[in-house]
Length: 87
Image (cartoon, rainbow, N blue to C red; front, side, top):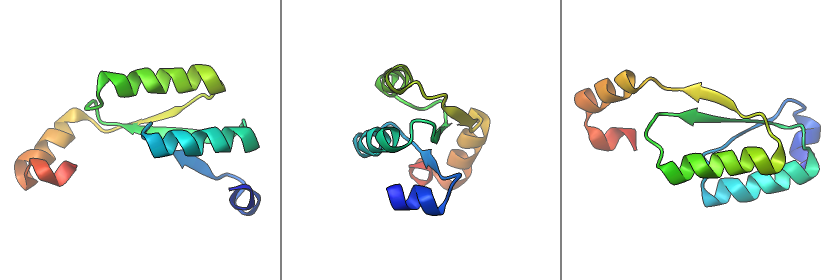
């Protein structure tokens, strides 16, 4: 990870706040506490995911950038291509 940060100075972590991402986030924050972190919010996360996101923001002091997929676009996609296509 240190090598990746040296080679790609503006490297950002895309985080889903799952178990694997939390390990990567912890490693990243130990190496570069100023690293960029962002996530894609589809408005379909479980409440526990939002709670974990809030805890990560508190613990690491990271200003997470939010990219939001509008729910209407998600439901249109689901209607046209089937619910399984958005997993």
